[in-house]
Image 1: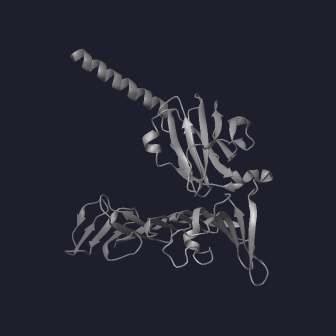
Image 2 (image 1 turned 90 degrees about the vertical axis):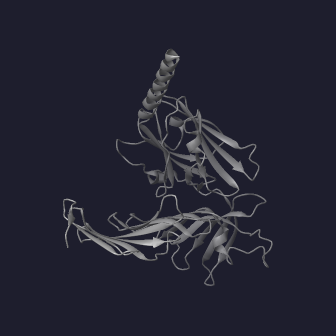
Image 3 (image 1 turned 60 degrees about the vertical axis):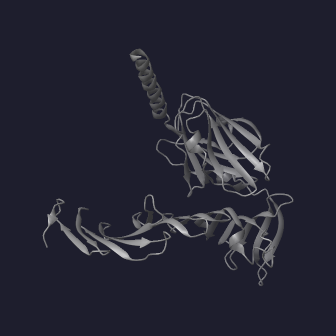
Length: 380
């Protein structure tokens, strides 16, 4: 019996050592943008990844588009975590590989609601020595990564630069279905057909004066709730409920906001004109905000909502900084929905060193504490 236990312990140690080694050798990053018919589809980490990450076939990414969707799987010889990430500013995704191993990245495209026979694009990945970037215009077939048109190796510690391939611009290949106009005769919106015999369109909406200010994304132009008096509302009557997948907003040709929709909005990202992230939001099923973070243009967090563990409640922390960017005060509010502030229940003041100076509890039995800079309690 003792010998059996020894074998089990040794086997467990060997398995953990192997997994630990494989995880530590995933050092090369592949950054990817996905396109279909000339339209960019930002990918999110698949909900199936946590349960498949230690399997040979890992379900890793998925698009949030409606009706026509993309999924990405990776077939690998080890069980290492590929550490997938979504970069919403770049509309790209990334994952990490072992440069000594060979992988297959399989992108599946589903058209319609029949999920039994997807089209597949198989990309062989081998000898990946440096961080790289890749733009994938979906095309059925087998490919080698290094031979693909939009494959590019990155310099050491350099971020991906997808805009650097503008000389090989991927153009919208969708068929223009119709155009709407403003009363002054300028174009209000173009509608492109995404799927035959299904009312899903790629829509590009323009500002009435400045054509370099516009919004674009996917829209389902009918509403299937037959209980309504007008069951087929147009995008002009109920535009919020027709959005699917990603929507992006531009001012003077520069993207300032990015939203992800699944009937209701699920994510929203807004940028300062400088390109610095201004806010990020995650929404609940009824479009109530479940989580958000506001940033100052210097990158410091201005305000954020935080879900209280194992409850349905939230707190909102509002930070106050000095002119040189030093945190001097945090006001903490209660919130039922993660968005609306209710009672202020805690106030904290800090020394310039970042150490707590005063903590004031305004909820229940009022309490206030003062601290020395070494953390010890200070008498009033």
